[in-house]
Image (cartoon, rainbow, N blue to C red; front, side, top):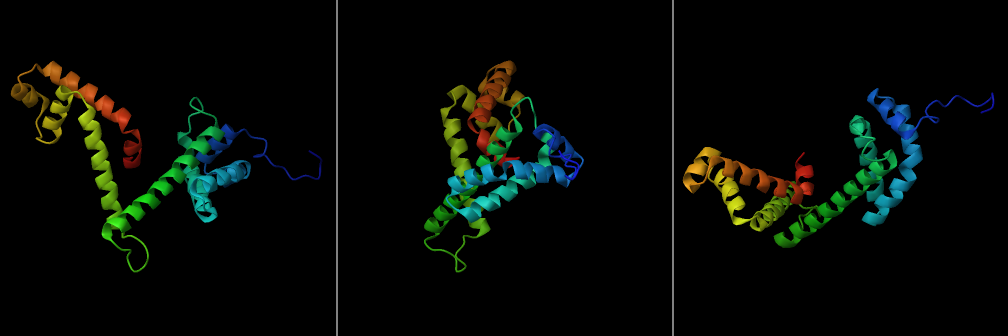
Amino acid sequence: MDADSPPTPFRSLSDAALLRQLADRRPEALAELYGRYAPTLLALTRRILGSAADGEEVLQEVFLHVWNQGARYDPDRSSVSTWLVLIARSRAIDRLRTRKVVQRTHESAGAETPAGHASPEGVENVFLAERRERVRREMDKLPPEQRQVLEMAFYQGLTQTEIASRAEIPLGTVKTRTLLAMKKLRNALRAEIRELL
């Protein structure tokens, strides 16, 4: 760097170091990350969404997320660039899914609202119905003995001790079946669980 160039301390930092600076709420660090990755992320979001405007909105959401959640980045799991691409892809796909839900809401209602948008309640109802259906399908895939203990716990409100008594099986068996069933559901419903967090 020549003597006339202004100092650019953030330009020389690694991506991970920039994220550490975000924990100290340094907007310069965010600006540097934006400069490095915005073009790539924008190209990705535009491609997924097929819309420049939607792609730009998602890009803003990505960097707002980075500003607010940068401290949660784990360098042992991925590089910063991979982490950013995964966030952008996830946000873009969420927006795409929302579009489809709105479309299905319009179709199920038979017409659009006068403003040309589905009501928030209508969209939420479709989301909830789809989520319930997804959970029901995954419950149906469980072995009958595992499904039984979950249904008794969640739909009948029974404790594990009450389930053991009513199903005439040892308490340890109830606990094991419940644990196995919950692990299977957690793995199958990762996306739904993330939406609820």
